[in-house]
Amino acid sequence: MAIDKPLDAYEQQYMQDEPTLPNKLAKFAAENGFKFAFPDGGLALDILLKVVDVLFNREGSSERFKVLFELIKKEFEHVETTKASHEDVKQAILRAFWNDMQERNDAKRARYVKLIGSALRSEEQIKDVESFIQTIEQLNERDFLVLKTINKVMNKEGDWKPQPHPAHPQTPWKLHPSTLIARRQELGVQIAMVLGQAIERNDFSREEGYSICNRLQGFGLLHELEQTRELPHADYVFRLSLQAVRLLKLLEEEVPNYNHYVQT
Image (cartoon, rainbow, N blue to C red; front, side):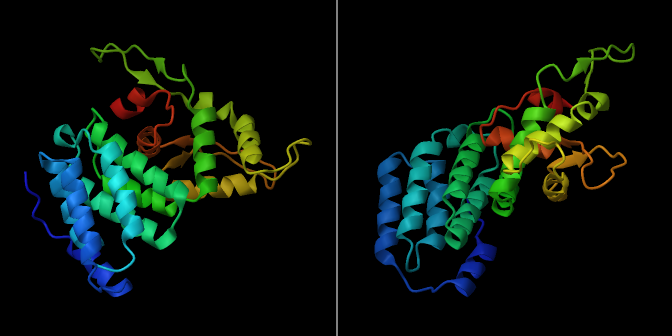
């Protein structure tokens, strides 16, 4: 299955922001390296050669070639049977390369690779893979610490309860807000701990953690359960959004109640 749609938007970015001197040797190595890894051709080769056309026609691409080649060898085993959009995967790979070129962040690079591989292997049809790459690009390490802490504290096995209803042929499962509100103090303490705050006297300000949660809410990853707060020591309550649950799952985190969130 060929993919003929050009990568115009990103190609224009590269032309504007990076020298466009030819690098034929790097491109040759990339193309033939992929063909060696995938001697039977197929979709993986087709997708990656499209990306190569943009990435390897310029100076300084050897490091990107290495990362891309490793990503292919490790993560493209299931590309022929993936339920993800082939065009979306291609765009996600290109965005990951572009972000890595700009920031050179090893932790984010590892997340890009892990996310793309998970999307390719998933039995669920993952949509907008590129948008998940963009989300990772915008988050910093403290954001991820807080997001994983909320998953740990506010998403536990047994939180969802069956709620029988005569109008439903199957028993629906629900998460009552009181379950999460009861953990508001634990949430504030755990977030303060991962942020390096002193919690011994329990009079620490929750504002740093609260501001990061608000930032994550701005990316569509959290939802606040509203309540009256008195500053600066007031507790707060946030829960994961469906987008956050999917992102954490794609990053191979343990996500309790995943099926309940997705089905809901």
